[in-house]
Amino acid sequence: MPRTNGELRSAADPVSAHDARHSLQAQRRRQARWMLAPMLLLLAAVAAWPLARTIAASFTDAQLGSTEPPQFVGLEHYLGEYGVLADRDWWGAVANTLRFAILSVAFETMLGLGVALLINRPSPVRTLLRAAMLVPWAVPTVVSAKMWSWMLHDQFGIVNHYLLALGLITVPIAWTADPALSMWTIVVVDVWKTTPFMALLILAALQSVPSDCYEAAQVDGVPAFTVFRRITLPLILPGVIVAVVFRLLDALRVFDLIYVMTSNSRETRSMSVYVREQLIDFQLTGYGSAAATVLFFIIALVTILTLGALRRRDGEGAQ
Image (cartoon, rainbow, N blue to C red; front, side):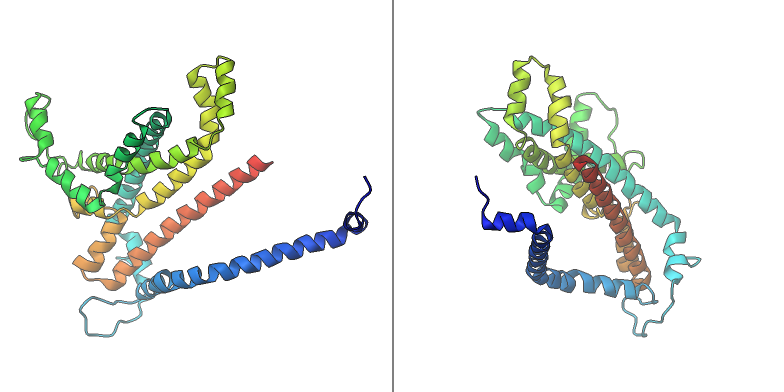
């Protein structure tokens, strides 16, 4: 077929075609910036400005209720003899937060994957199971933490009652007060609450897998575990990674669950609980702001490293 005039011009002048594509991409980028501008302004108002105030306060000796104007102390709250980075309690809170995040996210991912695989199978009660699965996640964290605190009470809790009745224990267990059990107890409660969130995200990834892959494997007589390992898992892995990243960032700033169940216990104190203790209990606005700033940069660093790893993975996959 003979070429059109436009095709002849494009073939004769590839530079002009490249410039046109570049101009179109630049126009789309400008439109995207204008469309994002209202959201960025809103984020600046509700997030950037308070963050800037917090960072500024961390360089002063400000205290709640003090009538004296705050004095500039530089990096004293960060690197001083009694600064955040020299405080053993702070590093203990960092270790507790990392332990909680790693354990809870690992268990939630494995259980969420199992629940998603179960619910993804055709069943007459699948819709009911999906609705029931979301109940723990829909309960506010403070409510679920208080509910579990009552259930795990060493004297009046229903958990100890049934364990004693079944002969599994001989004396009541202080689940949230025992230093050896308190962190594991909080992890179990968080897994109960947040596993539905992971299952929901993984279920969305499962439903995007083409059915042709499973039909071909069934025709070839491939075992079910091999289908999962060779087909299902590689195809849903990007969705699982996104779910893990979201959940990990959320777990690193955990506060309400730990504070409601164990308050300021040294064995379970998270970074957010440490910041709250300095700001509210000790009324050290400057020092607490320094701790909050360090917490912010830790989460920001984890976010940057994770996004960089995902970008490199996507680049390697594209190649």
